[in-house]
Length: 395
Image 1 (tube, rainbow, N blue to C red):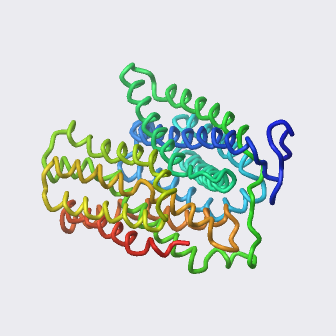
Image 2 (cartoon, rainbow, N blue to C red):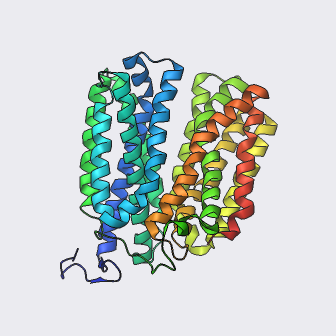
């Protein structure tokens, strides 16, 4: 798509606009990352509503979550090719429409099989959306010469907290869950429309491929970055899901204190991401990733050994700071793998990394049944130490 001469010129592969277009594109990408975070936060906050609406037990809820996860993982095998063929603007508009519609409809399915089918579509739409906006973010870094990925991921975190916070406030006001989701779906749709119209180009710049074919996506560098992404997501997912329970179950803290476990981790990560791009300018990304991962490993080791609420909260906060730049750095590293198109590299790495969110929490739950939750959270230490050890090898 050719931009107006008064605002930009075109050039490079795919006719990518330069000049003021990266700034406009950054505004659009920021809105899209925030919209994805709002959708994720709203869905997470309304899992209990789904449980009540359909009369599900814990196994039934797990089935709904598994359907969403399966849709997300399966879509990653085609998301890269969709973005390369149709461009980020088209993909975020299509995936955003499905995502917003799914949120609005999730409490209106007449039967459970239709709910599972809907969740497959919602999970798939989130994956395509995720790959598209991350590909857009890395392209904006290339075009503008500025580090922006960590700030964009910070907006995802802020969006997630905002979506969950809106749900909590609306419940306090007595607003019906179905109406809440309708309002949130409308907000997500408006944000997607706003963001998509400001993306810098229809198609992303692509490097010349040093060979083509699917085999290029599964060579050593892709697996290295993908497995490091898996380690980062295992650590992040474990702390999101188990930090509050660790405080209440292992340290015998009241519910109000236990809730701070999630809050300090997520809040520290969001704040640290706002400043991580400045550090990416000053330090090599491999060294920064290694330092942050080592901080997470040391903080969690101290928190688990000291077994004190204050130590646990401090450890969770430092772990959030340490892991803040991991996912943005690894997505950017994936796009530097020679011969692999940018969107396809992000999709391939995501396909491996997303397994971390799927296997991490259940793995810790299984280990907690054998040993204790404190011992099981040693998985976070091991994953962070692995990141620190291999981070200098990223492209």
